[in-house]
Image (tube, rainbow, N blue to C red; front, side):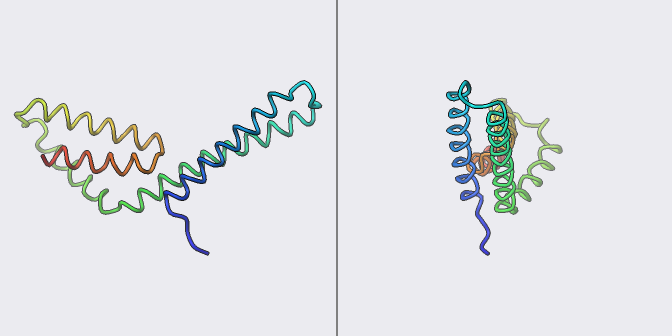
Length: 130
């Protein structure tokens, strides 16, 4: 069986999120007509689907990180360089831009958005090297 790419996994997560929204809305719109047992069952399934969404976004981010292994090695190199020389940057705007790039990368990783993660990695490297 073929493996999913990070982009495909991210797309699936989006689809599951849309499905969870529809199912959740159905439950809330029909709350008064559902029996307690039906309501609980719908709630449990809704929460299970949302858990799948979270897991798929996490997997997607993991796949992106696998896809950009060479970029991660570059980030490691940039980190080592920054530890050694960040204090000596004469251009204050560059120091600010580098710090902003690190913040953007961190937020991207936490967002679990594969495209944003890849762009942020490139942005940090470009900012540091400029």
